[in-house]
Length: 377
Image (cartoon, rainbow, N blue to C red; front, side, top):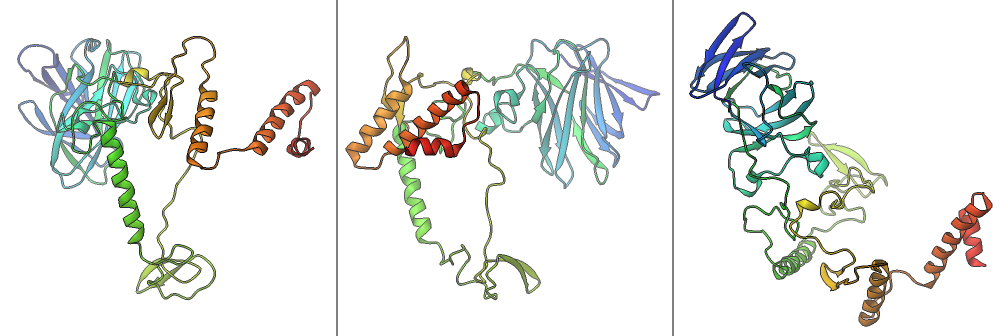
């Protein structure tokens, strides 16, 4: 347990602040000043210098946190500006666990970082699971963008700092403590992809509720589209602007303000994707199975998120793609809708597969033109 402070301001001055029952903590500063102390709370001013920090060390040896799961540091921001705090935990081999957290003006909370769980990014998350998101631990400030791992049985240093502030910044810091993590990665995602702990009004509790919410959203979108103001063919507001039509997208200034203008001379506001990569977007399951309370069995076929076919085959080829293809064509025949692909597309795919085999056998490249020529023939 962490029960007290030894405050070290510069190298020469050392002050023991003991608390009942056990180990003390040495507190050092780097480009920061401890202005005052009230019980277990220190008022620290971080200077407008490079990487100001408050540093916690064990009085002797190393901390053994292998039987606990998270580090908690009470903090309070008494200033009128939001702050970004940087946290770094090091072991005896100089390995580190790092992260950051934002704290609002004139607010307080418990800064929390998981020290025993896998790095959040290895689990597909920016930060570890936080009960605060479900309203279970109000006042918790989970450290995000964590990186690195440490030997939790040999912790040598905890550094709490901030990026170089533009002016001196005060921060009230309580005594660090370690405790069991009441939220691990095990079973934190329910069958609807939601955070399992906690309740909130919009939380889906049944397939019927999910379908009802979908229908409600579809009606809202129809109404929203119906209420949209008139637009030109480029998406600009037809009744707003009055700029000269130039045939080009451009910027123009009016009454001291800059506007985006369509080729037709109307105002518009541009929203779009910043980047798209084929490797992102899907929920990664492999290697994270323990996170999910429920997962569909391999080979089951779903249509509109509803189980359409249960795969009971347990040995040999399970026929996933074959069954899914059959289900698609049967549904289209029943509903009179177009197939996703037809005979021509199938023959092109077949020609491409044959070209791949031929390329290996003949040890040469097969061009797309040659594949299409073979297909047309």
